[in-house]
Image (cartoon, one colour):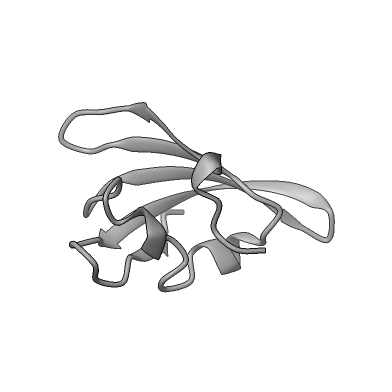
Length: 81
């Protein structure tokens, strides 16, 4: 599966935005470089994403930190745990 804009919800703002993202993708896929490329208008560096993914049909939860998200550039993230 690919990134779904309707699954990315901003839940808090400020200097760092906090987002919730729900997907059937594995967290390793979600943190892959470029996964959030279509969200460059919403995400900025150091935003935090609470990512709900799935591994073998079992839901997983992890924190993902946006390491780069400028304009049309590739959005990069890292696993925050």
